[in-house]
Length: 132
Image 1 (cartoon, one colour):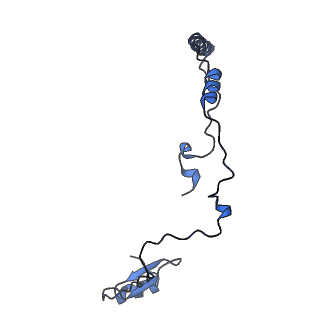
Image 2 (cartoon, rainbow, N blue to C red):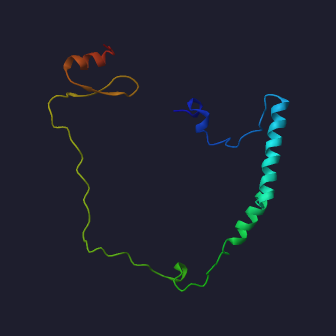
C-alpha cells in the first residue's frame, strides 16, 4: 500500500512539533507567564535544566578503551566452530505434489492470474474469458 494512503502519524519524517499557535494574545501571554513561573520554581529549587544536564554528565563514568587485549579478534588466526556432537548433513524436504482428483489443472484468467480448474466447463469458460 502506498504511503500517501497512511495516516500522517505513521510517517517517519516530520516528528518535531511546530511552533505553538495560540487563539489570541491573552492566551499567549498566559502561557508565557506560566512558563516563566515554572522556570522560577525550578530555579528556586536549584534544578535548572542546563545544570541538571551538566550534573548528569559529570556523574557518568568516563569511557574506558582497552585496545591492547590479548583476546583481540585481529590477533586470532582461526576461531573454531562449536562442536555440538551432531554429525551429518540435513537433506532438503521433498517438493509437494498434488495427488488428488478434484482439480483438473490450473488456468490463466487475466494478467497471469492462476485459477484452479475443477471441470471441463470451467476450462472452456476460462478459455473464452467468460466470468460468472
